[in-house]
Image 1 (cartoon, rainbow, N blue to C red):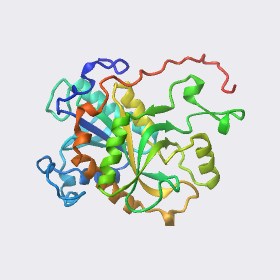
Image 2: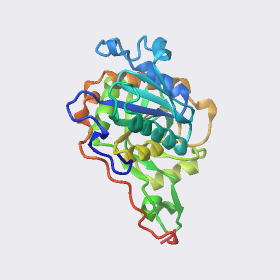
Image 3: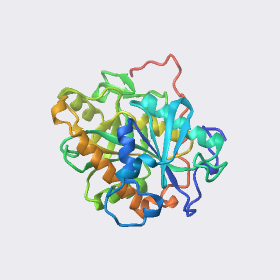
Length: 312
């Protein structure tokens, strides 16, 4: 089965109960927070509270060594991978995990010959756009769209002075999260007491450090709730395997002037653990029928000639 033309085995059939999820973070601290929130399979139905007592067992999750020095850590329905920072590392690591699943069968060793994943999730901490996604304990964002915010061309005549790569005809710069997935994730987090903003999450290669840059991003992408560095890479790799992607982040800092003293990384990691404790215990999130049966849009062709002008 080719990556560009995924077959019907790309995800378990609706109602099979076999859905599992690949969660891709940037760094190990984020991956550990995700794993700490996910209960042991035997405890998945126990109402023990968000993340309660889970941290001690996170380090014991079974592991699979993947090519390229990557380590896939597994717990319950979740396989968790720390990919490295930035969209390129995220795309490469996600594609490695999905290729491993295609070529070797299920890397969990449970269903040889079948890709195991129903959904790929880009997860971690990130910057929130105030006031919709404030820096506060338990502040989270769930993407309804994942946008490659700075992949394109400066175009003085275009709105915001920028034209994205999709508009230029050289691929895509936006990935829509299935509406049912966005709603189920946001509902699970809200039920656990987190404050959730839903909207576009921006992927940037350079994090924002000034008020002027933050304003320019919002001018290009009205309604954006947060920025991160990996979502677009994860989403593109998933799309090439016929899988939908989602993005879930907890807020560690405000998008704008770089002020390390105001960062709340510890609070954001604690909220990320709570978030995945909530997701793992939410039955609606773990139903394969939640994910649309049809594959995502195919990889766009390069419609523009290679010598096409970058400005209109």
